[in-house]
Each structure stands twice: as structure tokens, then as C-alpha cells.
Length: 167
Image 1 (spheres, one colour):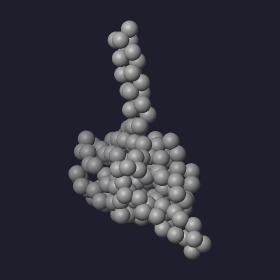
Image 2 (cartoon, rainbow, N blue to C red):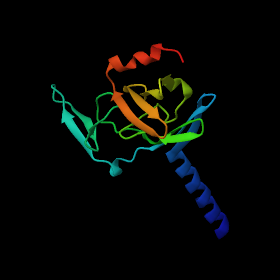
Image 3 (cartoon, rainbow, N blue to C red):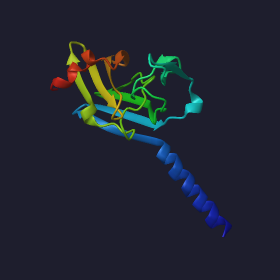
Image 4 (tube, one colour):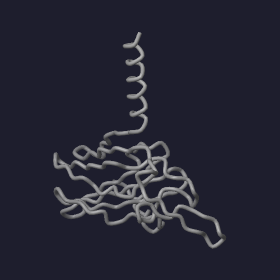
């Protein structure tokens, strides 16, 4: 009987842990993939700062000393956050900067239609669109060999024009 209870507790623990982490691999083109991991946001692991609007309403404005994007103004914590983004081009992998990327989607998963990759001269540029259904932001990375730099992370509409382009 004790072994059955232990087994059931173990299965319950594994199921709970799996619900905390979401992962996948997106095929962006014939030779380009994007591996990703998201996890449930844990507010105890972050410094959360609030600000006050001109009308006196409080809202979360910074997480870990950075302006936070990914939700409308309010006091709700993010639901999830990116923990890994690895782009592989022709068997060369590069880790992308995912710092301060919360609520990348409503359910924490990522899909191909959130991204556009373009070859620009000697380097590649990867564009991403992230939204939980309320707050929306875009990220642009420049990739050259095993190096990358995040050039843009913004909710300013001027940076969303890439969504009108085709591969």
C-alpha cells in the first residue's frame, strides 16, 4: 500500500512540474529551427516595482529593474516567462537574449506564426511577436555565426512593420 501511495505522489509531482514548464521546437525554414522553453512566472524570484498612473491607479511597471512588457497596465503578475531561446541555422546554434520576456503568448507556448527570419547580407535577422492577448511587444535579433544581439524589445507600433513582410 505504501508503495502505491509513493508512486501516486511521484506521478502527481511529475505532472505538477510538467505544468510549470512548456517547451518546443519550431521549424522556421528548411535549415533553421528555434528551440524554446517557457515556465510559470514565480513572483518570489523577481523584484517587482509598482508605479502610479496620472489618475492615481497603481500598476506593475518594472520587473527586475526593467520596464516590463507583456500585459496591459495593471497589478496582475505575468503568467509565464521565456527561459530559453536557441536558434539553429545550418547546424550552428546560438542562444538568443530572452531577458525580460514575459507572457510570450496566452498559454506560454510559441508558434511559427510569431516569427519571421530574413537573411540580410552576411547576417540573419529574427523578428518575434509576443502577446498574452492584452499586452503586445516585438523583439528583433541580429544573428551572425554563433553570435547574436537583441536590437529591439518594444511595444511601440513603429517596430511591428515586419509583420507585413513575407519570407
